[in-house]
Image (cartoon, rainbow, N blue to C red):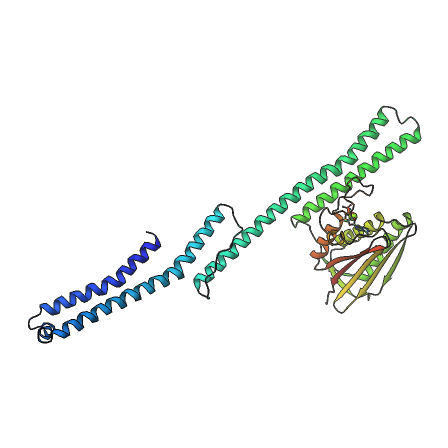
Length: 364
Ligand SMILES: Nc1ncnc2c1ncn2[C@@H]1O[C@H](COP(=O)(O)OP(=O)(O)OP(=O)(O)O)[C@@H](O)[C@H]1O
Ligand SMILES: [Mg+2]
């Protein structure tokens, strides 16, 4: 039975039961021998009229009270239940863009409606996330296809050149082979990055956290980097204000990946004759700050907020001579955040870029 009919039945019960019981009592009283009531009515005809008037007033009060009670229950229970039922139907139909009205007050019904809205919001967030992941996966597949196709096309072209005898001198053959080798290397790097990224995405990076002296770690790191930078004709400045016994909790191998990605970008986007990279380490009370600055081509203000997003490249032409898939800085961000740190960038077009990282000190 619908709630509305149940309430009408309740109303009938509230009014009828007292009336019937009252009438039965009257009949019993009137049928008794020497009934006082009948004697009174016979002796005092006015009393009979007063009695019936009182009975009518009682009936009216009963109806009004019953109506008020039933309307109150209807407003408090039936309306929210109707909204909840409509809401469940919307959800079943896949519509998650609505909000049900929450009754005023702090009672169970209001709680139920609030929780219902919360549940709908959670479902919507999760549905949005699934759509976003789906879109990113599509983008990933189209990017991989493109990024792998470019070197494969070159490798095919140069290999055909060798097979057809176009490369007819040993120098030319050497050049063709070197290009094939470099392109295969590009593919290898891309595949490694993507494999790593697939792991990152599903939180499957096996971190090996350890207590490391940030100063010692960077001293070693800079030794390695400086050799590589020298070969690119880039000057490296290293300033370290961090105490030797200042430690952080980090995975040295993953941290290396972070530094290589940042420095790799500085090299890749260098546009000055005299390239310069500065690494600066400072410490505060409970954190260490690392800044890696270059004097390269810089990043436009409009691109700066997105450079840590997956696949974001300020140079949207994917055929750009710089290559790359826009994964590097998103890997940096993920690793730094998994270390409980944060990373951000400052940049001025044509002047240079600084990437900052902050990690919490290990207080042992
Ligand atoms: N030091 C920098 N100088 C100028 N632009 C930079 C610098 N670092 C990052 N960028 C810009 O930010 C974008 C994103 O960088 P990210 O490292 O994520 O991708 P990528 O270098 O294009 O590709 P990948 O790192 O996957 O090879 C780059 O495409 C570039 O436009
Ligand atoms: Mg990069």
